[in-house]
Image 1 (cartoon, rainbow, N blue to C red):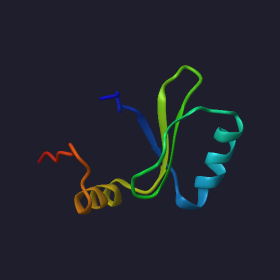
Image 2 (cartoon, rainbow, N blue to C red):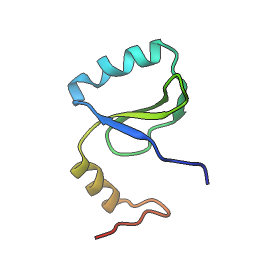
Image 3 (cartoon, one colour):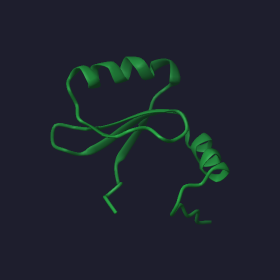
Image 4 (tube, rainbow, N blue to C red):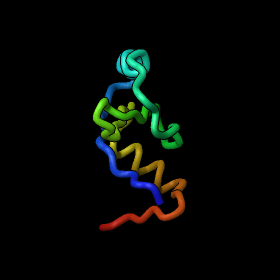
Length: 77
């Protein structure tokens, strides 16, 4: 299984496109298509670090994952 660890930054929904545009314009490599709740852009920085900008919050992402869990997802209490 490929390494999935990455750093994610939360951005407001109203600012998402303004944040995404310069990243794409700079030619950042996209390492994954978005398949989770909310808008996300998964890209590599110039040193190859996996980054993400995401327009949502942790509570919404957890609720969505619990409603439709993907293979291998585990929740710990």
